[in-house]
Length: 397
Image (cartoon, rainbow, N blue to C red; front, side, top):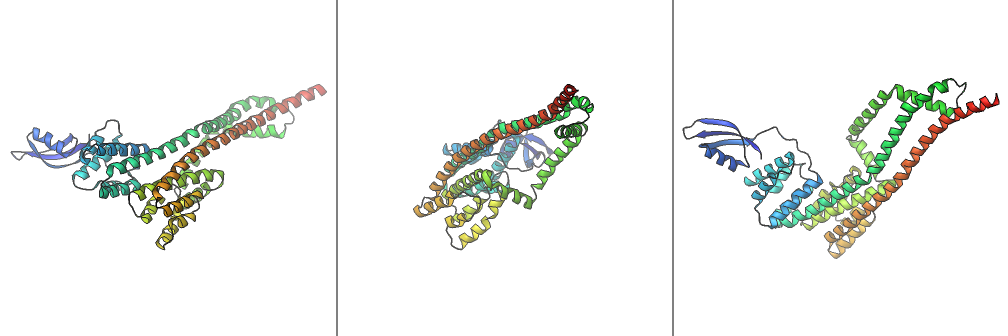
């Protein structure tokens, strides 16, 4: 439960101040009345919370509980009070749900409060709930959003799981290289020093080994600095745009384009089915794609829509979507079932993205094994060749 700073006074006019943990201000007033005091003012105690986006799983859980309890007839204020009192949620979620409840009690709309708490709640949720507040189907909207966030979370988790094994292999390659050049090769240094001449492969290995064993801290520093400055560079708009452009090209690009198309189609379907105008749907859906290069092209899409161009023709010009997407949108426009067609292709693309990720991992695994084999083979050649040559020289003498 949140902690409140309060000022109060008793029947004699004596002033009090302090902190009390309470469910809300009504609960705070009740606790003070039990002490014979009347609340004068109250505010949430603690430092100002830095707002950050909620995770997909957290959004899915919130929407599921909101939709389920709304269907059961639980009032919104009581619903938010129950969510804020849930012991299984994080302190950050507790803060957000408490803020939502406090503002709803004051008569502020739920969607407006969510907008004031941006980026904790995404624009998709804000506009969907705003439309639901007008139409009165908050329960259906919340459950639809829960389904969407659950699908997005599952796709993200499947992607992470699929990349675990390749990451382990890459870490093993780095570990093997460091072990060979940092510990194994120095053991042969004394033997190699006695030989009059060494093959080029051995000289290369010795040079690398000397650098790794003598300047290992430099490698660590440069590695850490590379990661640190790389993340900073990705925040530069031009660099981020360049990287996101690369993400839409080649074999990796095909997988990413499938994911971008599915994400856009599902968001657009949810917004359109809520009764939001198409042009506004496109603006909001374009912000959920996750690629600055693709999102940047929607300025022209919006201009085309304002000029009377159909959505399918405008989307067809976007580089970063699969070819099938505008075709499906065109069928939806002609049949009047745009939302259903978009949901259908989003489900299909989610499945294809999972299959494509599985195939990609199958390609990565043998490649990493080959890289490891080449490195180990090169080391073996560099170590064995001079030893073999020395035995040949001894036999010749």
